[in-house]
Image (cartoon, rainbow, N blue to C red):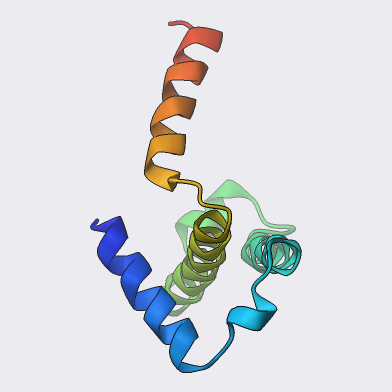
Length: 101
């Protein structure tokens, strides 16, 4: 995945619609939470066997929710000047130290 290329596309999409005014950290974090909830809704009240039987349409809907979560996370990290790739790399190191094999 080329994160920087995706981010450029996302920022261009947002700029073309003049949505920056709505994308402050508070609203983006709330939108991220809402989208994560919409993702979780697909798994509510079902067991692992039912998940294994998801059809193509269901997987497509789930992929769209995952994309929404990613988009809001990208906007939020960009708005806070957080290099998300570096943040993830640092967190992997921290988790490895916290949870050794």
